[in-house]
Image (cartoon, rainbow, N blue to C red):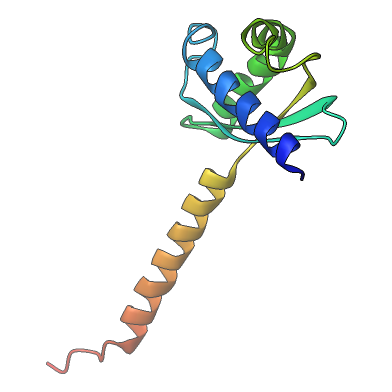
Length: 127
């Protein structure tokens, strides 16, 4: 990415995060975090990665679908916030970022492996 596209991506990431925490907080109930934004070279499309915290996968998917439905409104609000920095606001493509859930799943697997090794390495009690 060029310096310009990186700056625009960070601007979009920051402004969408602000919008979701203020203007759209009521429509998006669980905790939502904008983890990354990438933009095409011609600044026409922005891929926005969003992490949704929730108890179950169904809850996260439901919240994300709600966000996708709000994407045109988010883009409109974004346009009013960045109108002095960008001539045209890029099309928003939202992606569900599940890296936190994958990291937690990996951490649980590592814990199980450690517990299994400790159980195997501990000599049986000779009573």
